Image (cartoon, rainbow over all chains, first blue to last red; front, side, top):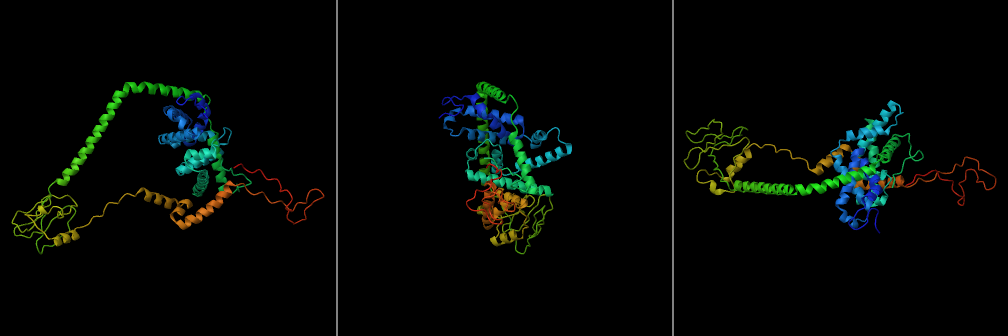
Length: 175
Length: 278
């Protein structure tokens, strides 16, 4: 059974592949980078990698988890170059509506910033499981395939991530 | 799989932890709701075409230069490794300096960090106050005082692996060498850097998080794992339906349950509240 975007063993129907998966990959990259331009670059680099390895495409069983894994790793590499403070500012601006009162908007932004900081400081596997599950675009099996773990391990990671976030944010609020 | 969204029917939103859960959920929803700007697909395809065109052009013109550069770098690396190895071998083969001996009755002295001196033992021999520390010794063979240039904190030790170097100018017994070694001031060794595991344990203790501290104690970890399994089951499974309110009068005539009695087993359960999707 041929997958979307694959016509022959070595030829890749790139436009079909982009239309099928680009939006998901954008959200995956954006969840880590919180910067639209950087996320678009990551999506572009992902498909460039796919073209470089198009000879291996027939051996890929699950195309979507494979693409998500490439995009995630590229986003991680790019994140080391992008300062999180710069990345978060634009995203935090987009969180609040224009007609929100200023003091409430500031409070919401501050809270969201604290949540994003806490997410960034989670252990790598917990952060990945939490962010991928929050996108609502990947099934549990796809997330497990992306991370190379079982579904029950993914559920445990998500639970621990949530618990850890609650503990850390609670400690931060008490200070 | 979507994480169960905390709703008012499941979590006490007024409690701090409920508010935090809601804050986390709102932030995650905002992240997932962010979509690409219009014209995204076209931009991606154009960018890919541009990248492909550049990568197709560049290797042909720069291939000889690139390969030359890599070969040169590999050759330099090999030279460096060879040079370092040669220096190691040369140091091991360097001749050992002759070591002085202490005469009987001479007191071994605590050497100051800037000099290593020994008391004069033979007539006319006085320790010199030259900038280069000098060892004036009495030896079994009549010879000029042996001068050693030593650096700060250096210790004079007999060359154990080169016995030929000791003779013919100075001899010393193993016991004397051991005594001198005993009395030589010891300097504290520099602190070793922490290993990755030690840094991790230090971080875990500093944070004091339940998961991490439980991992350090197997019994506590077992108890923690049991509690976590129960909490996880509660987190992912749908909540039980609320118990029927027996204080309200039953609707209609007919089969009304007696006040205070539990609903009969055959009766249909009340409709469930809107349970969240797992």
